[in-house]
Amino acid sequence: MNSKVMTIGTVRELTGLTERQIRYYEEKQLIFPDRTQGRARKFSFEDVDILKEIHTKLQDGFHTYELRKSLAHHHVRS
Amino acid sequence: MNSKVMTIGTVRELTGLTERQIRYYEEKQLIFPDRTQGRARKFSFEDVDILKEIHTKLQDGFHTYELRKSLAHHHVRS
DNA sequence: CGTGTAAGGAATTCTGACACG
DNA sequence: CGTGTAAGGAATTCTGACACG
Image (cartoon, rainbow over all chains, first blue to last red; front, side):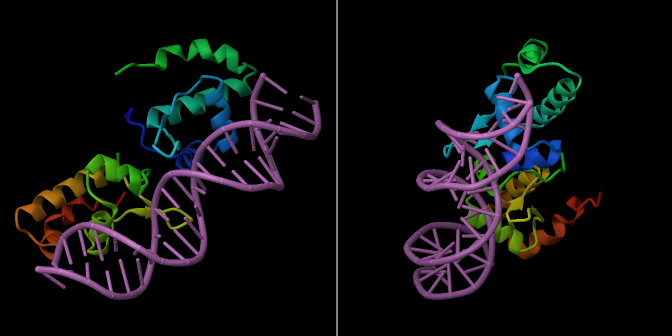
């Protein structure tokens, strides 16, 4: 499911990450949530998986700018 | 996907229904969204399908109390 | 660099009610 | 019966910033 339907609060629960981390990963171009009219972020289940992967990689010593390349294949343009 | 992850606003967009209609169908026991700590409803993609079905049936002349039975098979307890 | 937090505002959602029919 | 709406409150999310290191 690539449809962006979840708010950041739900993603927080599903990933165990904090909102700060999620927003930071977006800032670093690792995830690309949609936005509602009221500028609230909307994520997909795929985003949740990517986020988990990002966090794992970071704990393995990688940096966000390094992950930007390895996560590139996730960007499927529908 | 039966995971309850969407807020009513997303469901509104996905189904084309109003929040009033969605809440009313819940009141009539046709759908069973989860709740967040802050009492906000959370729906699944299956709920979205059921909601569309409910609206179609209503337009076909059925009443909510009649649909309660025909939708019973949807209640899969995980 | 990656993450925590307090700050103030804006958008979202909630409930109970009155309305129509 | 099914749905619209105005009302007030509570919870959510947003951005920019300061902090640590």
